[in-house]
Length: 381
Image (tube, rainbow, N blue to C red; front, side):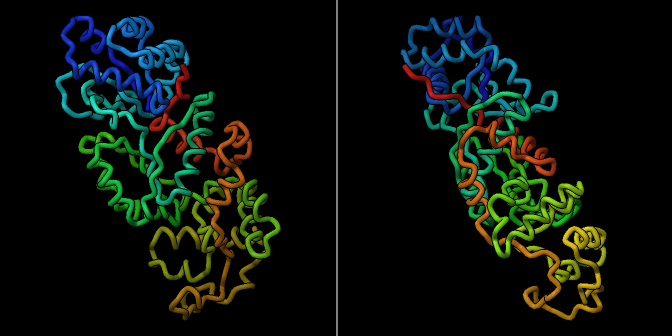
């Protein structure tokens, strides 16, 4: 995270009223920059003053020197990130979260950093480690899209285990960890309901009660929906079963049917049973009935190819019994395949693979990741 050292911290040391705990805390903040766990920012003259403090070690001074040399770049960045930290000399005991000009600012008392565990990288919590790996890539590319420049990402990746994510997040909250938690929305339509995992996480959405936690969810159904068409074609175009849905995703992008592409279940596909099982007035049912002809046409089908085009015709009680499969799913380990094809290499290269259907999501989620996991390269001395 970008941590801005407030002028009050400089005034504290200038007044000679600092304590041993204050000195330890400032040293730890410098250590966060030195190790590349977070990124420090202050005004040039204030960093120049702090560099003269006699209790700082060579490591601390090297880190503050790095911050001093990066003031121009970081000074611009602070206006582009969604969230950053502000370190103040204060009697506050715990961090507080506020919003200023659409930015979330977490105010940290200087002495809160009196333990080195407090300067460890932010936790990036996803449902599985394959998710967090993709979110990491999104952070690097999202920073390029939103800020125009490369931004180092550093995070401790934690798996939530799907439905257990809320329990894991409760544990992290109890430890006082900075944590960004991202879940699949599981929304089967743009105005549909979020799934159980995302719903369970909402108990941590109060930033006043949980100032160190940020929740986010995919706009579309799953993270797989946010992967670019070029990946699906490159990886599955010759697959005997999975090539069909890969080609469909590209066609939907060409047709600018982004809502269909974003909310289709890529893993399970779509059967008419999925539509008819929804309550009559459910948003999901209304959406897919409205989009059915487009979906069929994009695959060269028509309504004549299916029997159960009204709920009265469907007598199946279980999904696997349904023979009216509109879209064949892809049961591969898609996220693992993606990170294998696009490992942590140049985010500039990965950015060029994004198509119009997913670019906005990469910028949105990527900027959130970049804001919470903003770091720097480790200082070498």
